[in-house]
Every structure is written in structure tokens, then in C-alpha cells.
Image 1 (cartoon, rainbow over the protein chains, first blue to last red):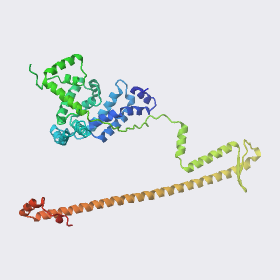
Image 2 (image 1 turned 90 degrees about the vertical axis):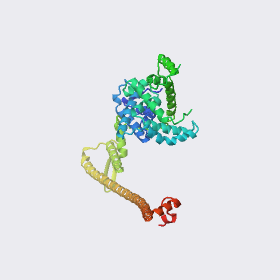
Image 3 (image 1 turned 180 degrees about the vertical axis):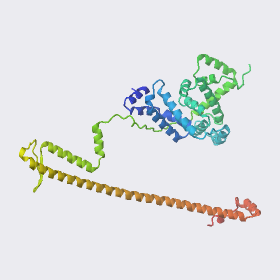
Image 4 (image 1 turned 135 degrees about the horizontal axis):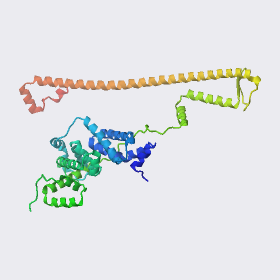
Length: 187
Length: 240
């Protein structure tokens, strides 16, 4: 029988530190995906994931269980990503720059839709388009699209009203639509 | 009936809720009815669906391989485990001394008499023997001699162990020095090669500049139409 997150936390706090590794195995893929999509750089995302779990482990006694563990660890990961993003020079890529840079992706027109090469080119374009968005929009889009969180959960994690989450989602998608319109849909 | 093409339709939140299927039944009916009449919103909805499709092309499959070091809250170890670990980490001479001391203690408990005399080391294994009052002086003397022998033996072992450790350290240092020398030589060779390459490049550039400065406008015009940039023949630029 698989233990719930709160049962694993209880065991960890009761002197079974190895139990925490079960939580790491359970959540590392999601957290790594989140940090990679927010930061856009593999190495930085790995560091952020490591820091997230270390921070969670150290602060486990403070976890009261009022929120879900997933929300709690997402919040930690977002804070770490925000710190890393703030330490970078602030570069928001404009739509014009995006179009200039993505010129080579028009080659995708010659590829079969759904082919691995086409998918890679689209993935690369998506990665860059996401990086061009302001981080508050990127956070919402990543948590919704890739982690399948409900809008209410995103609002809880970010500590903002539900309507703000939806507005950011709308604005972010509208921006991405402009940035990615040169790519055809893969069916 | 004319359809709305106004981009300023303010049903953004409802559109997003509908797109992600997080909408109440009442709102669903309302937005579906609206979408039939509003070209702006239906176009936006189609565009967003296309964006979602593209976003899903970026999947992350690899795992970061995270390891959380859990030393902070380790359960307390038993005394025996600590002693065993300490013994395993100790140098050989410490183990030998510990073994000898243990053996002597065991023999002492068993009442064994060990003496060193004219016949060499004499061990009388007499289990649970209790000596009488008249034997005290003989015992004291032989005990002192035995202690002196043990001390000398332990001193020799310590000296031998220290000597061996010194030799090992010296050998390691020599090895390390040799590795460092090799590494330095390799680095030096790389640097020299790079300097040589840079120097060659610099010479080529200097020649190129000299040649350009020596040319007049007619030469430049003529060479650009005949031989491309600079017009230098291959044999000229690569003659050195």
C-alpha cells in the first residue's frame, strides 16, 4: 500500500529520514519540470530542484499539514526560481526579437507535422517563447499546462485571487499565441 | 444577424475557464451561446487551443537525480557500532596494541603467570590459580619484567608503524609531484602551441595590412573584381 505524503512526512519527523527520499522520488519529476520551464536552463533547474528538496527537508517540522505537501513544495520551488531569476539581468524578449530569433524555425514548414524533428523545433520555439514572457505569467501557464493544477490551487500557491490567475493566464496565452503563430499545429 | 468582431469583448475569465473545463454549467451555456455570435471570442478560443497544442510539444522526460543528504536527523547509533567503526578506522599498530592488551587482560583474569627468566619467556597457564602469601615478591619482580617487555614490544611496534607511514607518505608525495610536473608540462605545451598559432595569425594579419596599405585605389578596385577580398593570390598570403 502506497503511503500518502502526510504519512511519509510523519515518518520522517519520527526519526526515519530515509522516508523523505520516497517523497523526493515522487515529486522530483514535477519539480524539475517546473523549474526547468520557469528558468529555461538545465543546470540551473537541477540546482533549483536540489535546493527545493533540501529546503523542504530542513523546514519539514514547520509544515503544518494545513495545505497539501504538493502546494507547499511548489511554493518553495517558485520562491527559489524567483530568487534565481531576480539575480539575473532582467531581459524580457520583445515579440520583434522573438520573431527575428525564431526565423530558422520556419524550416518546420518543410517537415512532416508530428515528426520528431518538427516536435523538437516546436519545443524549442515554445521554450524560447515562454522565456520571453514575464515570470508571473509564465508561472501560471506552466503550472496549468504542464502540472495540470486547478486555477484555485494555483491561486493558493501564489497567494493571489482566482481572478488574477485567470487574467494572467489569458494575457500569457494571448502573448504566446502571437509568438508561436508562425508554427503550424501538430495534430 | 451580424456577428460581433469586437476584440474588446470582456469575457476573458469565462473564456479561460471554458478552455480548461473549469466552468459551471450555467456559465458554460452562456459562453457557448456567446461563442456562436462572437467571432472575436471564437477566434481567440481556437488560437488558445492551438497554443495549448504547441505547449504540449515541450515535454521533460529526464529526471534530475536528486539526492537529499539526510545527516541532520540520523537516529542515534549504538555504542558498539561506534566502537567498531573507530576500530576499523584505526591504524594497524593501534589494532595490534589493542589485541595484545586484550590478550593480557584475559590471561590475567585466568590467573596465568608469565615470567621472563634465564629460560626466556615462561608462561604458566594455571586456570583460576590464587597465589599464596609467600609468592608476592617473585610475582612483583616477574610482573615488572613482563611490563618492561611489553612496553619495549609496543614501542618497537609504534616505531615500525611510524616508519612505515612516513615511507608511504614520502612515496605519495613523490607520486603527486610527478603527476603535477606532467600536468604542468602538458599545460605548458598547450600554451606554447596556442602562442605559436596566435603569432602565425598575427604575422598573416600584419602582412595583409601591409599589402593593403601598399595598394593604391586602382589596385584595390582591380583586385576586388578579379580575386575577391584583398585580391591576394593564395601563394602570397600563405608564403611564410
